Image (cartoon, rainbow, N blue to C red; front, side):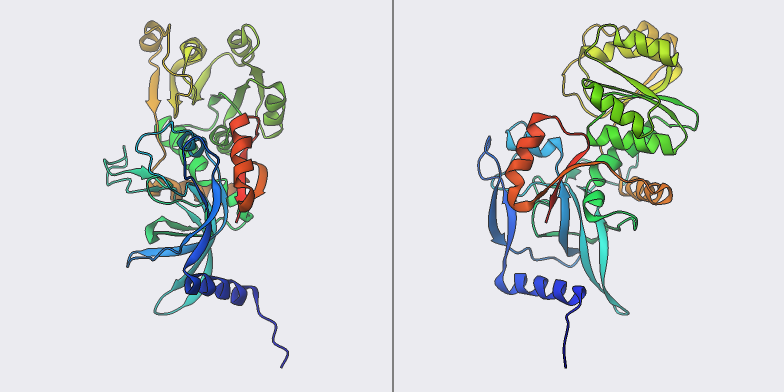
Length: 351
């Protein structure tokens, strides 16, 4: 008999070989301020409520870079970073045994209150080992069906960025169809995903960037227009073009944040999910209370929000923007590219 193994058979053999050898390849941070190294580590052993997922693709976030640079609390080294991942899970049940294409909820222990995370909440990839490896051991509750229209690399680009954008836009800022939205710093994963979600929801979206090229690319994704914030009086140009905004999304903070109240319509909501430029100087409270403006801080999101985001992405066939793809063996180059900050979309590792 001429036996030709199926892809499923080959995948299962690969998995079994890894476990017989008890080793797998992963990107390891062994020393701070050094690029990660490809190394072999012991294969993970799942507990009763955990599963092992065969990672097919994983994506970088600035969090990974900050940890590698020592700019994060509670760092543990050596460690395997990575919050974003998509792959295959061999699900065994009483009725069926099948290989499923899955996407991973990128955090642990959100807690019972949907309004905010609990004290044990933490992002996947520190202190627990993350997705920059051939396999990951993860709670079964973190495993969700992967949107069927996405490729592995596109799916891997979605979890953290999609969850953060979804919660900030919809749960916190209560985005509605027809709202006029400003998204600052377009080009990053969360900002781009927020643009795609907002456009799909029927909002009118404007953007800012320090790169005119990135603004132009954002308009091709559905933004009405945008401005380069390095140009003089960029805020006044936006005000003239849009008239005012119902929702503003920002991840930088800094002194530019003080310009937002003047750009807001009455009753506007300002959502922020980062503060890379630090504290805000010169922010006046008068327009905030007079216009009834609300400020909403936001971090990640709950499993329920992750499920809702995936459903929305599936319904509207949203495809995350991938800037570049590196094999796992060239992970150090991927980190170097992220440090330059020139990407438009997510940097992805193919595992």
